[in-house]
Image: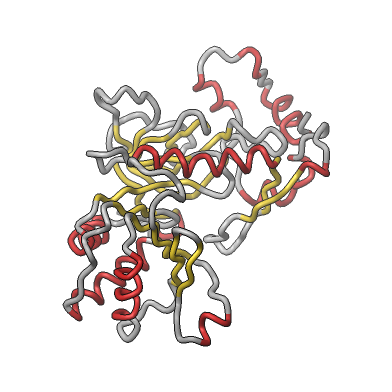
Length: 303
């Protein structure tokens, strides 16, 4: 029902109903954001009711955001992913006091009071754009007064805040037991600094607006396990072939299972990761030692 894949499947003599091994998906070409933009309407299921569709825009970290069509049901499934990784850590979404230190825009009436946060039920949403040495004490006072159980943050913003806290010899109240980092690469030095100041368990999560994958850290681990119910994850090398050796460095490529109205098959994320091999976890899906950054972050030398 999707014109683009009808054409690609015919070109590659690919018959989904005849697949016997998941690696047969390598017969299909990799899909990049420009392919979608050039053929946008050919990615839409011809049987989909336009009135049932909504869209979300990718974050555009490459400077090239993409509008992804989806059903309201798929959007709910995306929301369920947040419930899932919070449950893994022992929390219920909205049941505990929490801090959100993300890219939210602050209402003008909040900024006029020289505050950089606002309350929404059990959540205190804070601006990442006003984390400065001068504002650090005010941020810490607001967080301590709110007594959060966990923090959900861009690692770069929270890392900067705890760096300023160390300079000013400030500390958090002991209410914080967990920190969830997402949307950016969490570097080891950031994890160490955040853990040292918050004295909390650090959970790393990986996903994207396109909704074709999610990977999370489980308790007692720093590795990222992909969730097989969301999509198929490949780590590919320069030749476009799936890597399987431990500690292989490659690009994450995903095939989503849950968005039939705008399916993405072998979609390039341009995120670079190091492969791990699950051992005695009972979770047989792709596991990453770390997310290392984006393709655009790397400089390739002759060596």
